[in-house]
Image (tube, rainbow, N blue to C red; front, side, top):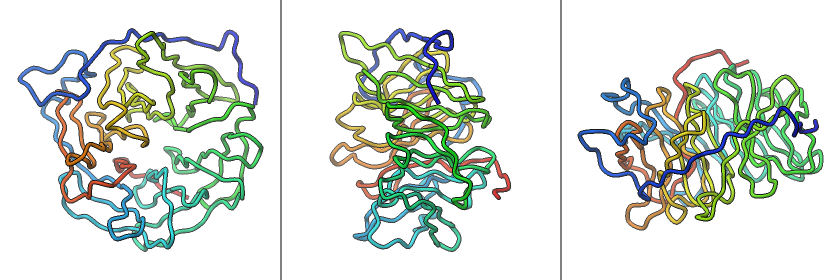
Length: 315
């Protein structure tokens, strides 16, 4: 599928607003630069996250409530190298990359099923909001392109064909399109594929202060109003229209991890910090900018993903 660089390209330039490297502790009034919503003022972070850790000398997938209770190992893998975990919409399964192949995990039974066997590697599974498809990045067709498959690994379908490398793929909350980041130039663009057409959805302006150089991952908020972004200079949050860009962690502490994951109510984020004794998985309140470390998680844990709220049937 060829990218359409002409009239379909919509460039949304960001006016970069500087923020402290870390969000400050909660104050009486929220920072007006955060994507605040009055409905989030008295919200509490609830629910469950999944994450990866090697705390028992082997990489496994865990789940834990965001208050640190009910921690469980939900996988039983051997010689695993786990990346890119993603919940199914019904919260009963997890798709993930293991040793460069895509797997599906049944959380209740801990049974894992390998879905792809491409010797050149498959990455970044992303479950569609209706549960019918898994999008992923693969080299089976040459460069890193986006393919779709059913959750059982059947009905493979190529979605992009481009000499550039697609670095990640994320579904829009309504499931009508998916977004991705191409490896081209300064790599500051988020593209959208919908109805067989591709267009630039957001262009992040680089500048002399090098706020961005490379964007490698992003996530839509469940309400569709915001993006969280991973770049080589840290982790950011930005409004859907490109306004109110805010840094939530710098490069030295955020490290190479997925873009921060949203709570189902779009009021909180979870992400990993790598900062000495403070290392661990954190929850950030996007109303006031405060954050807290999730207890009972070892410092070296990564890829936290919030469990979806909506319950749908997955074929």
